[in-house]
Length: 460
Image (cartoon, rainbow, N blue to C red; front, side):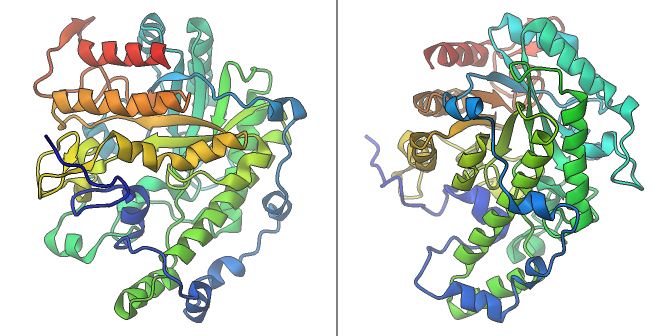
């Protein structure tokens, strides 16, 4: 019989808070009693944002958007169950080596038909604004390049599928940019050993969280969509403001982190607090831009880094988005763009520590979602917009992980969406070894995983 660790502990091989800690490049120290603000100020960590001038969007950033009273009274989580579709995922060609899409925006009608026939009701479209935005003018949108999104929304209506459009890459921000060593938080060990992403990424030239014109362009994107789709009811269409917002660390913050490591002073908590404040500010700009045109539009705002919810957004009535990838050494095992997530041993479920004790299991996931339970008690709504296991995780482990993770999400009465339908996180054409595939109109269907998803959806 396996022995169990306390789920709140984090053994050497676990990544219980890795969505935040790995992205920020810190070692995961707990918060101490140091006056962190004084430390950061002395290192000028907050000066860049404090000095920022936001002439055109200043009012939007400072005044929370008040939702209609009717929307505030609805507190039930949306029962959306489905998949992400990637036809507008990224203009970076390397991604097509790992995800099966043609980057032409031609969403496949069969996807919608099969999703409906299998009993699901939701698609999320994580998209790259560069497909339809002039590369020399962030305020210029080419409407003919938006027509594929129109078509996807029509397909959603045809097949009874709710469509959620998401800026996976927005002006001045994409969470994937952090994997560029010049921008992200790649550890010295990974730099020295060459343990870096195999995906080449064309990073944003500006910073959504620091640059006024870029924030203006972000608001313009959502104003455009709000106007274009104003007559489509929220029962059919919702907006997801920004995929996994995680502000890049400023130079001063990086200096503070390095000096904190040398002196033993923990500055991570203060940086974390400042970054969440920046996420809140950008979210409010997007919310107000949308509601100034369409006051009834249903909006999703992802938590910090796809994780931590932002309680201050409760007053806006938005749904708070969350990802489910815990633990990353299992769900992103051998992922070419995330070599830092792969542990030293093949994944198992539950995850075992080197001494053979249980390190991460269902109870760990339940504990990690405690902030969502607190949010719900105050009337907040949640949805898991991304989840899944990459193709190198063994099939038996994938099934065991999904069973426990969906049970936990089910207790939260929340819906969910896999990162793919077709591709390495999905149920079609995953190329996962050890899977007994069934031919499905020329595709390879993981029937066992599909059956599990259908069962958990009905039980929720």
